[in-house]
Length: 454
Image (cartoon, rainbow, N blue to C red; front, side, top):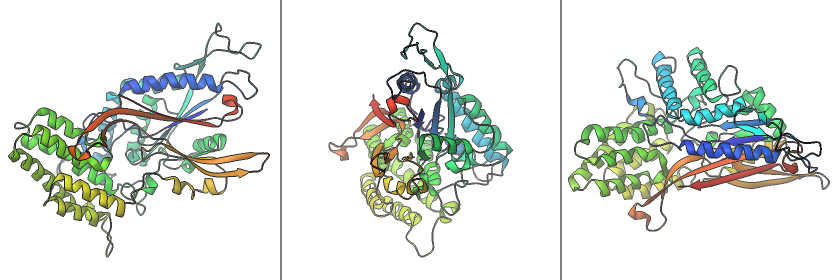
């Protein structure tokens, strides 16, 4: 049995709250239940599951959403940003600091994964001579093999070199990963172990950032930062920091705390509405509201003029940089509410406006050559199951399906009733996929589960 999860976004606590350890305890219960169910075979008999694989499909640790990237300014010792030279010792030092903080903050969650890898989480009853579970027999431990692939928030673990290898090994030990040495894979083809998983379960996994021009630069590849990285660090991460630094004594502390939740706003492009709502609810004077808006505009101006941002600007083409520059100019002359409307227009007309990546699955080699029945992406946080094709012969039919693994995340979701009133409903979501081989789970091939709780 193969379990796939993605987009858990465990952060270091400096940029909003990650999903709680309760989700991991819930997952632990479901994992043992899934393993027991998978032990029932196609002929109706019970035989304890012999293999359990777990694939963490990118953006599990969220390195990007950390204010620790802002601890040092250009020219200062220790300065590093996701887009600076990864050969500078300060780069690996910052990455190591953020990684350690994430692992410490989520020690309870990490312990659950490690327990699964050690065989201390899933224990199955043995089979009796009649092919039924022997509930009185000594339970059998089932160790999980856990694999890690990177996405656009943890792509740093794809970087080569001894300094990054030391960081990876700390992750391997803490999470109990099935990994010896070398970079964590971004594509399945980079790992023999992952290719074996693909073949065993007829699954082709990909994080999905490949198809997001804002969060992946095709010219530079996955060992390089994207324009989205710069926007995240210099705007979303930095705004609450600057607000607290400049106006901390004048503002309700809950306003600053809530501004740090920008990373958890859904839809993401509703971030300006969230800011506007927090300001109107907690900054009770027009003067303070204007000061907050001025900080946002100032950061936007600085962002557009950063040298790294200009490197993404394409000559004689209206690209992402030009779109953000247009947004920044409009921002200086209008309200957060109007900004939100403009961003949604840009999203639809510049950035594709689509949530589903199912059309990209149709172009995957594993789909075209029929080597995979299931194309699995993460990244979008949009759980879905899409039928792609029906192949094979009448005697041995097989389906090809696209599945998105959704997310494990704390959300503040914009209410659909009078959205201009900036009402957000908090809840947590959890999605996981299960794929079977041979006669596992009565011969079933896959399951996809997604739920929400508050």
